[in-house]
Image (cartoon, rainbow, N blue to C red; front, side, top):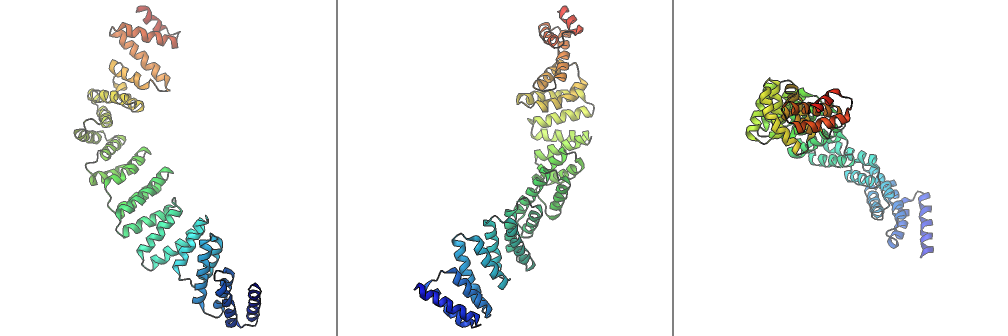
Length: 386
């Protein structure tokens, strides 16, 4: 049979050379009856059918070969065959999809993206929204950091009425932009979202905090006004809005919001601290001290030394000699690397103990302080008096 096969092959090639393609095909098909999975022969027959104008039969044979190569893991060979089909019938969208998957399986992301982009453009042009979205979802999977693709996907999801899914994609884009410091692009994105949809206020919580922390208070204020209007029961959004008012020097507005939040959440230590600071800003230092000191104690209790320091700064300006304030301040700056501030606070507290007659406490502190500054004459005099 091997010799007969070789003879048939030679006869078939002679017929091809003479231009007798129909007869050559019949000879090759004799071999295929005996060797139906011989991809070389199938490919040759497919080429010949293409030359005599029977493109559909040619494509059928190429698809058969592509299936064999794909199932056997010969992705590069399968890709080459599918590209032949693509040239014969450029409207076969399933071939674009098969090529895209094969490219992806070979790690050829750029090539896979090209095929899916062709599909996406074709489907969109022909009004096939569902398939356009599917293609963009594949593109987003291939390149998850491509914000242009993600934005297109989100807008398409909005068009289909999938607001929740669209907002998740918008949020993903916004988070990536903010993480990379692209605040201008992030601002344009969130304005685009508000223009296209009406999300709940909580959608804007993270970006508003990011804008506020970055000093973009005007943007934060604009977005927060919308967000609080949409979600009036959100303590987190109202807290951010109060912070924004305070940062912008709008102490009365910050104070009004802080009181409103505390009425709903009386144990909110953060807003108590903000309220105390706002009271200080409007000149009510006594009220500030009354509100802030319990909040500072709570912060220290949970290890929030930075928050406690921030809350204490204004109180220390108003009450630099108050013993309770100084005790909390020493605790707040205790773990800090700012030893100079801590030393100053401990010296002030020692002086306060001395003046109120708490001699043992004063003595312990002055001994410690003198160990740090042994030449300090004032500390020596105080210890001598004690």
